[in-house]
Length: 506
Image (tube, rainbow, N blue to C red):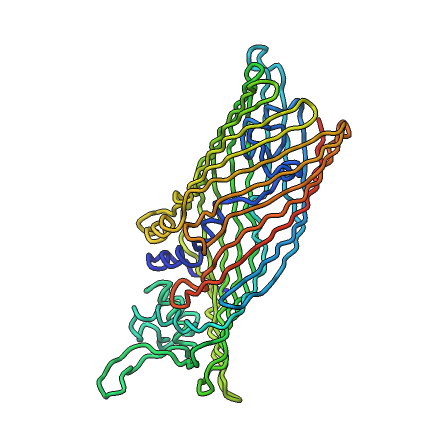
């Protein structure tokens, strides 16, 4: 398959708002509840606790709470259930996956400097942020829009001669040449024109010349549509941590975080149910998107022991600055309704590679409190504030539309995490709850995130074994396409996860 490197302004605008999408901007700015089984059992409420390998992802001062060096690893299995709805139709799909969630190590040096600095620690932790593996099927009867509207919208800005194959060109070379000269929008119009979905001619019936684009599709007020979305990949982070204990009750820390994104989406759309006088029986439109990204962020944090029972924590997470590269390939097929009729299979066999974009995710501030009841147990609470309106793409002169849309669509959110632990000798029983507000201003575009967790752990002395179960519910809306066929279907998701962690004291 040929690669076409694409840097035209019009293409970047379309891709930023469309393929990369508002939903993807949220996905790259958020993380699921991943980490050690103990961390998950308490729903991630570790901002004032520390002493856990995943706790340093919330407050980097937490590694100085460790009394000795530790190394640990976490494996998990998850089940994701999707319910998609559009008008009165709904479908249920599910996805199961086994994953490697976390691995880390903390080295603790006590009596550092033999002065007020009692301890210094160095930590390294790898952790999954989001797992994109999913499979969604939505089917519905649409009485508003058709796939023809998608291609007609793109075609309006181009001369019909621009969408034709020139002498000596084939589909591949024409698709590349049109993209290089006119951009991604023209390539979309080209696919619709060459696949016999749209045409150009006199739109009037009164003898007055009124040329324009029109559709070859005819339907009686509604069409049947189905879309299959297959996503894969993940976003993850690697934390390089340093923290220190000052005197007996104050801890500070810093993380240098390195992030990566590997996102793949296959979108397979079908439309059928046309009127009997239509030459087209069915349309299939296939798009495959690949996004690869690298990013960096910084975290600062502090924990203070007010007394033997109360701890307070405060941490700051900087924006994550990503460099993203997007690729897309696509084809379209129109199937003839006539016996022995001609099907149009327009496959450019080209990967369009867009110029790198810069994505800045929002920063966040976490305030925490923990109540420790001796060796019997604890209660921990985290409050997180995050302004998603600060999500932006750059350079701004090329992504002004996407940034304006993000500013209008996203909002400031508050989140609460609560966790508790009760110890019976070497056995620990755990539970937690978390809630995060909807990052979208409009409820139909998303929903709040709710989840609970349970778990237990056993301390064998030099080894700690922990297990957790968590369930999270959330929702979002998704447009079929960004222009013309803009109808939205809603997705409700329930994610269940079981994790097992093994930690060794060094």
